Image 1 (cartoon, rainbow, N blue to C red):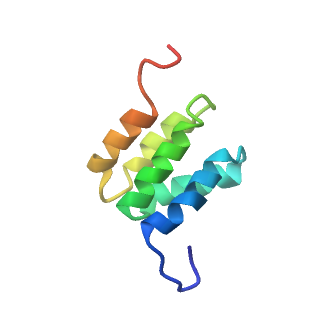
Image 2 (spheres, rainbow, N blue to C red):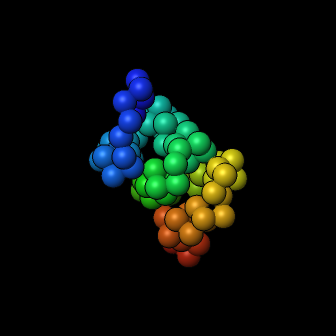
Length: 90
């Protein structure tokens, strides 16, 4: 995903999906960074991945707050609503 090599969003999807399986702060931070500054497709994939951790303390709030930093924040709200439904766990 770096080093000057360009890849399409579809080529990065497996790596972003793999990060969601990691239950550590480093993986969480990496996904949040993609949400904040990645391309729209990557950010949407990262939000979906973060949804797998919706029951982990603070992940929902951190994701919501991070979306606000993205230039396409309004478009990411739909991905957030799908990944973090309001009525789950209530």
